[in-house]
Image (cartoon, rainbow, N blue to C red; front, side, top):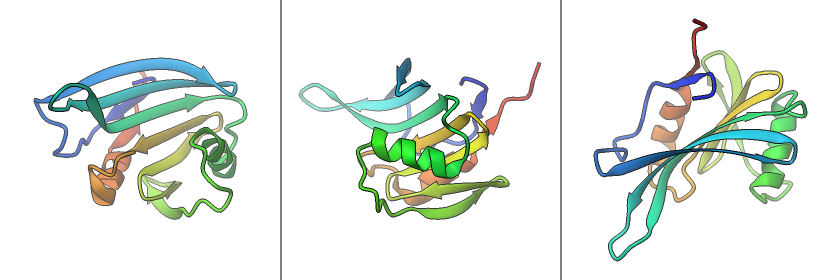
Length: 135
């Protein structure tokens, strides 16, 4: 997905889960998004998990990405996040998201917007995302 492989998915992603890819722009940042969702009884669907790859010149480092995502997700300036190591990259996570900057101008975010997969699987999914080998 846009230069990255997703090596781990939570158990909630199964044969009843549909997957869709989207591309869009917001705030001078290009997004590639993969969304897994399950149909709800009576119609509609609920997002189980989302992975976003963002590219933009303003995504210079982790504090810049935090500021961008705070605006994008309409979070308060005191958005509580915890630092963690993601395969040698300093990353941040909250209750329903984990994100990092694998390179200047690139950010990756894993979102569990409805709290369906939990923090452990959220972080395992984040740690399972790697830059795709060239070739």
